[in-house]
Image (cartoon, rainbow, N blue to C red; front, side):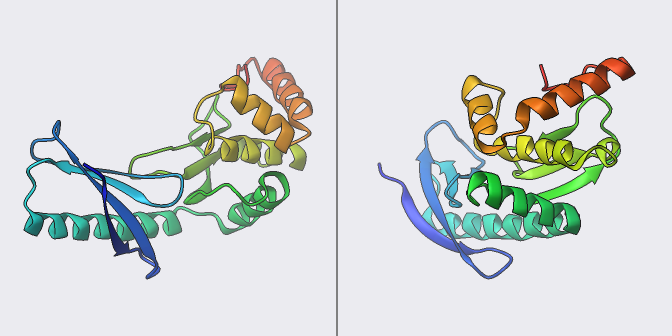
Length: 190
């Protein structure tokens, strides 16, 4: 059975396409996930009554509103502006994310990016690197943006990042040097 197509409004009043797929594996609950094209895939129990579907779509719209509010609270404006500039320069503006902010609870990880779930598209950058050279910080931001296209550190990920951010190897060398001096193995740089 083909997916049904619906629309809901997000927090900005924009229409978001929701594809509804009936799933025989689901018994009581529905599951939804953002798709790379900005749409939502909503999987519902196969026997879900039509009257219940509208209620479920309204719940998805409510969760989109909450997600947008969370993203706005968790975004550092200066870092957001910097990420937008890197996105335009390195990725032709093709990368989409929900929020980016500095965090102080990362010790061996310089950045992280969530793909999927309620914090999909949230990027966190370690406040530890604020004083590092701008081209290294830009690399860490570009690295996390590239994770929006490739979730893991595959060969495709590294090829994509290296082509997009030409100072990748130089920045990785700097990070390895700092790690060596501090006796820390920064995750994701191996």
